[in-house]
Image 1 (cartoon, rainbow, N blue to C red):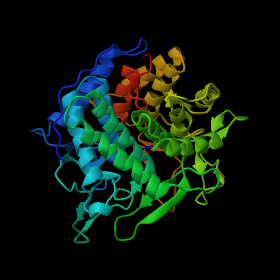
Image 2: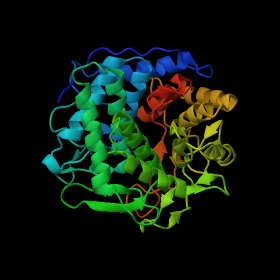
Image 3: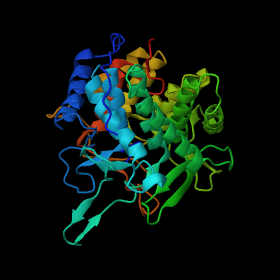
Image 4: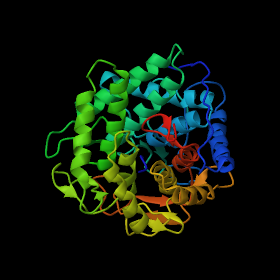
Length: 411
């Protein structure tokens, strides 16, 4: 899903190993170069956030650097061997994780203003001349649990790629801080347990998002499991990892061979209204994902297929580039190489003149979801615009890199 995102200097990192056989190295390299060029466009070596969308007129999106997209970009740049650029984005994520404008009680926001960053990094906003005031979007200044987990995964990815760098521990510490926020702010024992959706709105009137998400649980499980692996003999993260996994197990509908999306706001009732692609694919990226979960790929192939790729939600037409790249990676992980190759080729074919990939082939792609609790309609759409997140996922697929483990899928 789209997520509406201490200057640190690290030593050089090396990423080796050729991409797996299904990859189109030429297209993957071009997408990697496009990501690196966006970082280089911000002169100097300061922490930087990248704009998620290009060629967009809507002030609510123009210059918005979504945390999720930037976390993906940092992981992708690590995967494709662009360490200097990955470090700058990781530095911005660490800064955001430790120096929020709200002070010690602060939290990672869903979106920041793109560009070089200093403490505290400003959440995205814009001047409304007609209203004569500065505006901020409640989703963008809110905090989604899944976005927090993705930022933590990006920080761990870069930290472990440079284990001897003096600043690497600071990145890992920032990841732990984010993981602790998930536990402290969103843990919920209702129903199957797990973690709530996060917080909607800024400091003035934050509202808890009481639904739970299968996708968020997969993100959190990946982060907690990674931290537990780093913890050695400790068990600080074993409990949260198990809680996230129990929720995923509860969302697996074995008879149907697919995952439920999560729960309704009561935190208990399973939400079967929309079958989202990420809920079907991302759990399979977990290192200990049961083999039975791979039956969800049949659901994806049958019910998400659209114009050579996949759609955002089952039964809805429309080519989703980001999701098609995700499918390329997960189908390859499952050994379904022919499908993976086709998905990757379709995703990489969406290259815009500026190098980033178009978010969709369609003028507008409906998701069937609402942006936030104040939405009165299903108003979450993708548009045919160059998109950072889609480009980053295509790099991950081309490189065969699992963002939940920090390893290539063939290693």
